[in-house]
Image 1 (cartoon, rainbow, N blue to C red):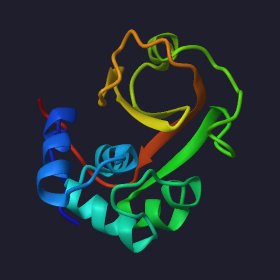
Image 2 (image 1 turned 45 degrees about the vertical axis):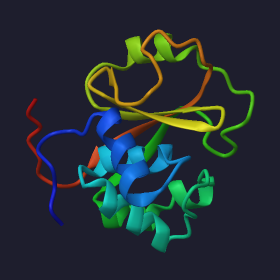
Image 3 (image 1 turned 90 degrees about the horizontal axis):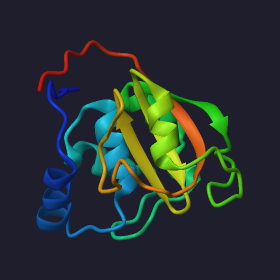
Length: 151
């Protein structure tokens, strides 16, 4: 599978999703794109094969599918909080607080109705770094392929 050596910005992914795929509600596709370092189209089509519907949010049964993660070359391990019901009341602090404590690596933050990808302390999403949204779960992304990210 072809991997990228540079992360897409959220703005680039937004433009691709809307212009080429006529999609919205695609935060999980953005998270998969960043976790696996593949293009939006590759993540979009793999997720579609596993049951994601275009233009709709994605349920846990799809975004947390271990077979799909394996196909994309990574694992997502729950570090804190919950991933059983990402609309639950588990509270690990705000996005701002949690990101400050993460350090190096790739992570997904689960907030009510949204997944945020964080790469080496940088939020790769429309959510701002000073966000006060409550984090309900943190998953660590472990990539199982060779990669070298450049700016």
